[in-house]
Length: 189
Image 1 (cartoon, helix red, strand yellow):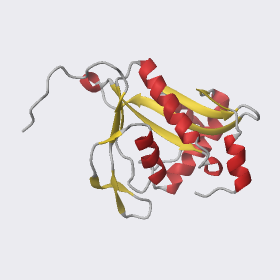
Image 2 (tube, helix red, strand yellow):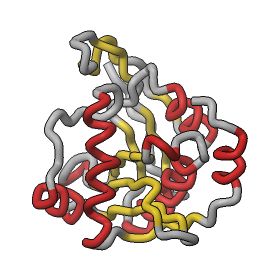
Image 3 (cartoon, rainbow, N blue to C red):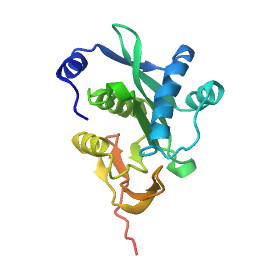
């Protein structure tokens, strides 16, 4: 998305802090989240959040962070962090990111992902994995490459777009710890 020069300039000069969400953030968070669900091109969810379901959803995550313009307290975006699986795979995390429509292109997503990487490590996760990065989400693909994520391959037609067509998804991962993740190379058949 091409931004007008003054908006791009404003974005570069924003004082952005990322903090844990608070109950009074819920209205704006739900608006940002639902915009992406409604677009139907990035999030797998189809159901919109309301105040009760939104508070429950964001509270159940390992961490929910919000990006705030500290000059005016505007909520610019958010992320959720949680386990990707359970038990023996519970050390692998998963996350989703959402930036307000009128604030995209200002590197807020990069700040959210960078904060999430640190928070995931602090929380004890060893890997951050994205299961369903839609192949037409060029901004996310570029950002994840820039931040050192590794693509796992392509799942043909893995995402159902809002218009009823299917788009490929590209899972990604990034190792968060400095520990060796396995002591031996496994041989797979």
